[in-house]
Image 1 (cartoon, rainbow, N blue to C red):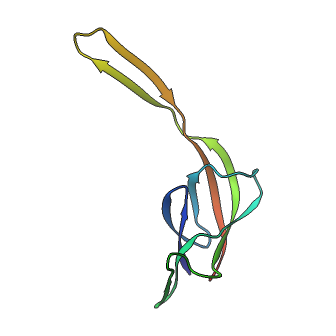
Image 2: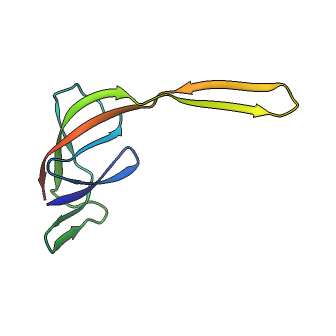
Length: 103
């Protein structure tokens, strides 16, 4: 069984036992969360497509980590103008482990 969920403005195809990184969600490591915005649920040949979500479907996941991604460097430069700006950014994320899909 698999599902397509929407969280953090992005869509993810998940199945039971999958691990994934999503935009930061509230909660502590070890907590169980329920992702209710399920757009599609499929099992074998049968597929349920929501309009926009599948009624009564939910995906349960366990929070594995709350962390920040690797640093990226943002460097702005204008030639011949003596203009240089350097900044770094680390995007926060939540690592999830999918435990159950009900649809």
